[in-house]
Amino acid sequence: MDNTHLIEALEQEVSRFSLKELQQGFSTLMERYREEKQREAILGKEHSFILNPVQRAAYLAYRFPATLAVAEEVLQKIEHIFQPTSFVDLGAGPGTLSLAAAIRCPELKQVTWIEKDREWLPITKNLQSTVGGDWNYCAEDFTLGNFPSADWIGSSYALSELPLEKQHTVVEAAWNCATQGVVFIEPGTRYGFNAILNARKQLIDRGAPIAAPCPHQAPCPLAELGDWCHFAKRVERSKIHKLVKRGELGYEDEKYSYLVVSKIPFSPYVARLVHPTEKHGGHIRLSLCTAQGLIRPTYSKKDGDLYKHLRKLEWGDCINRLDMQ
Image 1: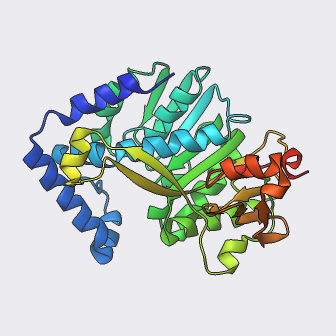
Image 2 (image 1 turned 180 degrees about the vertical axis):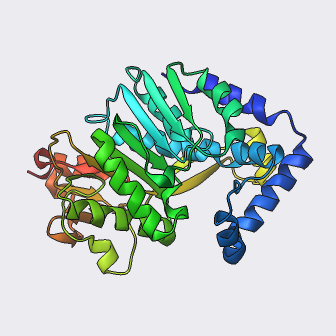
């Protein structure tokens, strides 16, 4: 299923406001995100961070396309195990992760959308009508950890906004209630990755098998080097997207971190490409996360078909055993 009708519904929601209103809503949200003290104060209150219909529309215009594209990419990477018939979306907002799951998985029949901000409900219902399925709305604070059982449970750009104690509560409850696995997606920043890293350690301590992006259960080699694991998805900007953000480029690169932990048996990968490939005349150098740590092998034309294959790999791709022979 493609997302054409979903994007059309999105543009319809956004078109209810003038460009000036959307740009002002965008500016207000960005200012509040950047002011950490004010951001913490807002997140500690009972009301939503997004306060009015204009700000919701601005969020849809400038953030939804990128976060949807990231969610689709993550789910595509795990399509060999992510085939749910039921899904729970935590701190769902406009239902971005649920919508991506519906697009990627035609067999998905039932979605529970947990979001305490009731103002998202009519918007999400409109967007959801483009993908079908049976969606249940739960107007509850997902940090309480009261989740129904489902094949998969996940959150997108929500975990890192919580205090560490509540992150632990959410991760524990999600793992307990999922019958097949959990998926968490966060911004590709140090702040977002810290939430992913904490969840990873918590679940490994529970004996849970990490399915992606890590090809092992060992400590993160990037974190040990003071770096952070993240990837990037190039997103084409729509006309309204460019106007609201006052952007000149026709695209943007959305950076993200993620974690997938599966209760379904899977074949582990040998390595994952954790930085863009360094390409030179006649040879390439890869940055690979492996069970032995971070390695940086070099391959040249002398390696024949293996070189041709590895040269095509993109940042975030996996290498399996057959490829490494």
